[in-house]
Image 1 (cartoon, one colour):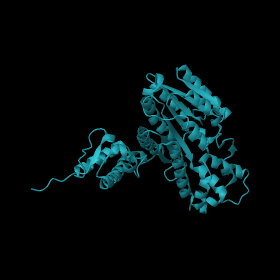
Image 2 (spheres, one colour):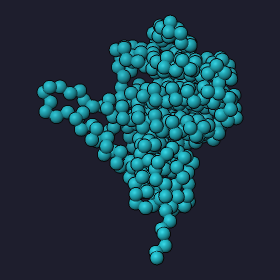
Image 3 (cartoon, rainbow, N blue to C red):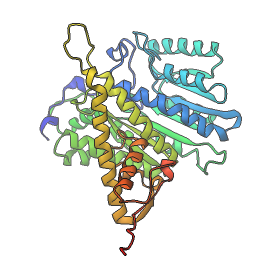
Image 4 (cartoon, helix red, strand yellow):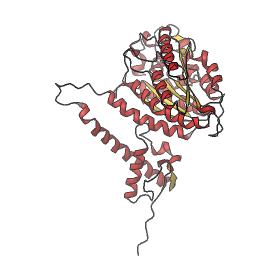
Amino acid sequence: MGERDEVCDDAVPELSGESVGEDHDSSSPFFVSKKAAAVLKHEILKQYVVPFASKVGRYAPDGRVVYLDSYAGPGRYEDGTPGSPALILESAARVAAFRQLDCYFVERGRKNFRSLAQLVAEAHEQGLAAHALQGRAEKHLESVLSRAQGAPLFAFLDPFGLGLSFDALTRQIFGTRTERGATGRPATEVLLNFNANAVRRIGGLLTSGKDTPNKPAILSAMDTACGGTWWRDVYLASSDNPEAVARITQGFVERVRTAVGSGAAAIEVRNRAHHQVAYHLVLFSRHRDGLWLFGEAASLAQVEWRRAQLPPSNDEMLWSPADTFDDEEVQRATKWVRTIRSNIENLLKARGSFTVDDHQSEIMAGVLGEAREKHIRAAVKELYKAGTTNCNGVGTIRRFRITAAVSEPSR
């Protein structure tokens, strides 16, 4: 297994109740300042939650939409930068005139909880609906789901290690909230952090000869999170860490998707472009709109993630990477459009005619989470100009009917 054979004892998350690595105190370096990976997930939340609440809240009693963050942390970083709870409360304030975003923040650590409770108290002063709950995630899950009856629910599950059990995710969050279409029944969506570092560290126990304390319990916790022992065989059959992480993530996503009858979209998250994957952000949604919205949010968030990696400039620098950032973004977009164009051409050959809305995964293959709808429009316009399709790229992108252009017979 190569690099995975060596597993440091301190690299294995501690077992704590129903999860591994759930409890982090605000004294952790993680909460001192925001890392680039956090920039990405926070930007996705900013881009996603307001449109979600606006759309699904139209059918909800009193426009109420429930938001659950099961691993909230202190709410803010020590340097004052907003964490996910603070960002969501900002979103709640933005939609307060026409939607009630009812926020539930769960945090186990006592020091973190004190900071979180202060943030929630400030939200109350603004007239926002917010609740700080102390304890483990699964302790409060049934209560929050009960309070969310009749309302759309968006759950953000962002643990440091292993989070909710597979059964809690599939049977409690999704299983008790049957979807019946966009006619006033509650929508349910989950944005989940599937931790690649936990996969590497815990998986390494399978091949490590070290006498790791609580090894059986840690492996059992991974079984519980993944919904069975299947991941062990996948790990052992993988040639290296990247393959193991990719295959186990894919297996987990597919099992959840199948169990709850949803669609799913996943993006890789790194602290730096050259770093290994830290975790995958996975959206589970039973509605096509959610997957399209996630793609847009992820694409915009990736721009901010790349921007966050730029080194600070100073007067002594003859050249700053920031000077070429916009040009590099244009170059990336050109490549994305080229990929999308090729994907559309392949679909045309296979189907002859199709609607964009029905084929997001095929159209965005290779660029999902990076490109967005405007790049589809650009690709379609190029194909129209080249005489490949009769669709001119004007109008609502998802409603585009892509058909092969028919050449007029020569006279």
